[in-house]
View 1: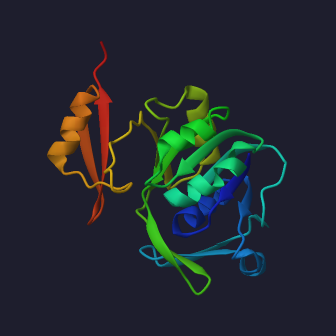
View 2: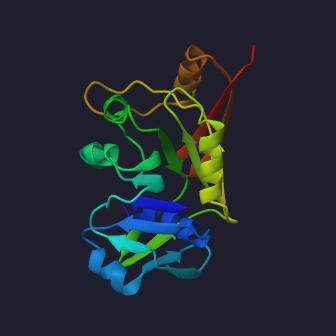
Length: 225
């Protein structure tokens, strides 16, 4: 599959690694690290696994006009917003915005004519001297869903085909929007507040999974009528 990845920080680098490992034709958009990646490849030090990998995706400074099966934009919220005009003009079957603090109302308006999903990858890390230091579990997961909807079966199949490799798992969910603080785009919720929001949205069964000492993933299911 032809895959385009925007953003090769700690999260995007690891995602690109698995996409390359799965045998896809991967293109990475990198501006500030263009020369470095072309020279050395995509170098990742897997901290917990005590190993280093080097991948060689195609590196470009700007997205081109070729057709892509999937485009992943792996950036912080404000960076995603700035990139929306570019993302909305791409020739792609599916776009996945990966990250947090997204202003989904603006994303939905800009991407209304492009199939798109929102995702969260459960890994962490940082860039250090031209190397990505990645913290990940034995199985890295991408939780993905549309706004207030579950991904369609063709979308799920396309994502699973792209990540057809051991050590990576796709978890489809039906996302919904949490209210934000008026003073900014971040609000911290405690367990009871999340349960109340889930109940209001019609969810009954709620599961929590600890990702890091400060991060939990919440997955909820609606009862079938």
